[in-house]
Every structure is written in structure tokens, then in C-alpha cells.
Image (cartoon, rainbow, N blue to C red; front, side, top):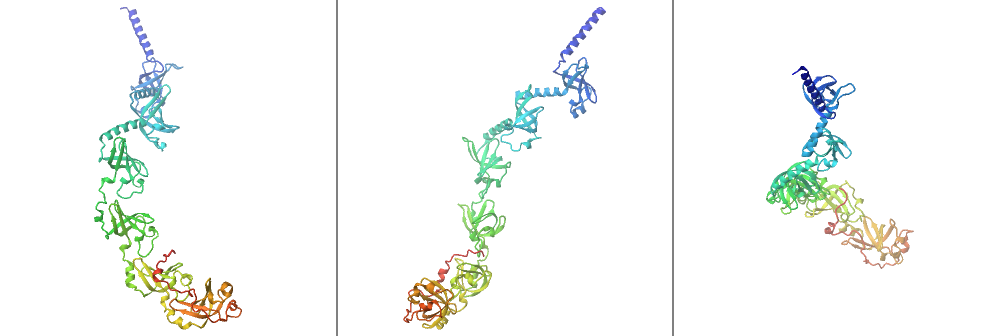
Length: 575
């Protein structure tokens, strides 16, 4: 072969290789190159072209640049084969992005999940970095609405690509789609093994007034408030919080409706079984106050078993208007079992029964007729309550305050806090009432003194104390009252009592009757001269024939029946 022919063949081969290098170096394509030089601001890459390409070091991540060595092969994007200076311009950043887009399109076609990091919150959803910026709509974030979207920023989750457009650079992803798939798989697994009486673990996902809904693994069950505890539950939120993990028992599963009823208390034995033998009536128990109502305090004797101490069973001596005045929630107390209703799940307790009954002490220590001393606790319209050292209050009824004086209100004689003496009149242990007498500290003047001092036919002086339709009351010496009946005023004065008599005016009258049994004194001014200038002077008559027994009762100071005085309503004044 001649030299000319050989040279011609070599030149042809070189031209072929040169043309081939141009085909592999088209602008806008990705090719592989070898790093030949690493400089401070650029990296020189050989892609088999007539000249080597240049990539700015800004396109490399810091850790990637630190590990880059001469001879490494990398993917590059051909931006321009020759610039104004004849340099081949390459881009690693664009090559990486095009590679990511290719991988995302494959993941979309094959419905594979991709990992992404939530970078920011935008209108309508979130922006997520999955290698490129992708949009996560708000409706695709979770199975339920998320209240704190800002709390997701910076967190990484798996996502599913639901829409991709490389040319527009648009990617839409969903987290909810993956959660739904997972839920459906768990749901099928749960339903395939679900049976009544089975123990399951669930997560509290919602709390209502009537119970809590638990996620059992793709399917929800209801734990009703009545199945939470054997004891009383005020509200499910007092027992659980959203997110709590609970082990529950499947009580009922309706396959047609898909409803699942759960129970928590059924995991333990019913504490009310044989409760009557465990807490017999009359036994002493200890417990903790768990709640208060207007009518009493509920006391927990053991988990699931509560008893009620009614306000009437809290004190022997004081009327308890509200339990909070005696106990508080959290207090440990002793009580006595009064009654057990196993079927109704009720236990009645008494606190006062744990202390001696002061009424037993009173009855033994203070027989009727005993003189006692105490402090006035309160004054009412019908009497005064006096406190004894044993903590019991006795009542001095207004009718038992004076033998002779007409007491209009107990405050005329007694003040709150005053120390007084009194006599025990009656003790009613069953009704818890103690009757006291103040006037009984002295002898009854109607038995001897009054009949001797006020004799029929004698004249007495007094002061008008009250005017009624049927006559005039006159206060005589010794706080004794007499009545001038209208029939004993005179023919003209009977029609004008208020004009003829004035309260506080002195009156002279004749005693016409003294009834010690009825405690009445009847008076007459018909033939009795009055003080000069008094209105009754003209009304007085010269007639001496007086009716010794007027038609109407002549006096106050009738002692009431002791039995009737106990029907007076109890004091409403604060003691």
C-alpha cells in the first residue's frame, strides 16, 4: 500500500470520529463526561468533544465538591458547544434536574411513592421539595383537616405524584392518597379478624359528650361513656385525650352497618357484684370525696364504687345548706353505710353517724325542768335560738318569754350573742327539737300574785298599749295587760275608740273580771272618772251595772299549747 493511500485512510477515519463527536455533543442533551481538572472556580470536563467543557463550581454542593476527584465521571448538560471564545459550556445542575424529572415521571407511571420535605405554606396548600418544587393541595395533606399547617414545615413525608408536566415544570403530589391506601389495607386486615369479645388496641381520634371514637386500624369503633368505667364519668375528656392508645374489648360488631361497640370497663370484673356483703349496712368505711352537688357529696369507696352522703346525714347539730360547707373535693372522710341498693348501684352513707349523737347526750344530761345557760345564736319573728355546749340549738318560743308581758317581737328581750338562762321544756329526739322557756325561770304570777293584786271591783291605773276593733288594751303595773271591751267603754265611746283613746295615754278603769285559767283581766271605764281633759272622761258613763263577762276574750297572755309551738318553721336567720 502506498504512503498516499495510507494517509488518505487515516484522514478519513479522523473525519469520521470528528463527525461522530459532533453527533454526541448536541446542545440541549445530557451526556457523560470525565473530570480532568478541578480549579477554584470551575471544573474542566472531557466529554470526547474537540474541546473540553467548563462547569462553574457553584453548581456543585459543598460536600459533593469536597469529594470530587480527577477521573470521576459525571452527567452533564450541553448548553452551548462554542461560546464567543470557543469554549464548550456544560451544566451539571440542569443535568441533575433533567435526571430528577425523568425519575419522577417513571415514579408517576409506576405509582411509586417519593420522599419530600415540606418547605413552606402557600395559598391553598404547601410547597414540598421532592428534588423539584411540588405543590401539595390542602385537601391532600391528611385524611382529616389539619389545623396547624405551619407545624408541618420542615418535616419529611412520603408522597404520591398525582399530576406531572415536565414542560411546564408542574408537579402535584398527595399524602392523603397514600394514607387512604394504608388505611384500606389495615381495614381489610382488621375486618378479616374482628370478632366480639376480642381485645384490640386503638387510638383515640375524637371525643364527644357521649363517648370516644377509636381508630382500630382503618376502622372506627365507639367507646360509649357508659362503657368507660364502672363508676360515674362526668365527661369522656376527663378520662382520655385525642391520640391516647387504649386496649378495649369488642362488645358488638354489626357487619351490615359496620358499627363497632367497644368497652373498657368490661376488661375488669364488675365491682358491684356482691356489694351488699362487701359493704354491709352499719359498717364503717373510708373514701375520698370526688364530686359535690346541692344535695350531697359523692364518695369513692373503691374504683367504680361511689356512695352518696346526703346533706341531712352530714351533721347532727347543724342544718347543712350546701355540702361545700362541710367537705371539699379530694377530702378523705369516714362514713357509715346506711343503705345498699345493689340493683340500682346506690350506696347511702352517713358522716354524722361516725360521731356520738348529741341528742342522746342532751336527753340524758338535761331532763325536762333543768335550767341551762347558752348564747343566743339567732333571733326570728317567732322566737330566739339558744346554743348549748353540745352544739344543739334550743328554741325559746315568743309565747314562752314572759308570763304577763305582751312581747311583740323577740328582739325586745334578746340580742344575738347574748348569754341567757332558760329552762328545758321538752326534748323531741326524733324531730331533733329542743324547746326552752325563759318565763319559767320565775314563778307564774297568775297563780297567786295577780289574783291578790287585781281583785274584782277595785280600780286600777294603766296606759293604753293597743287599740283593736273589739276594745282597748291597757298595760297595768307588773307588765300585766287588761282589756276594756267596747261594751265597757260607754254608749258613745264604743263607736270612736281611736278618737277617745290614744296609745300611751293614762287610763283609770275598774276591774270587772280576773280569769287566772285563761290569764285575762277585764276592765271597764263606764263609771270610772278619768284624768282631767282625757277623751275617755266624756265617754265614761254613770251606770254601775257592768257586764262582768264581756262577749269577746278580754286579755292577751294566753299560754299556747306546747305541742303547737313545735310546728313553728325553723329559723331562717344565719346562725
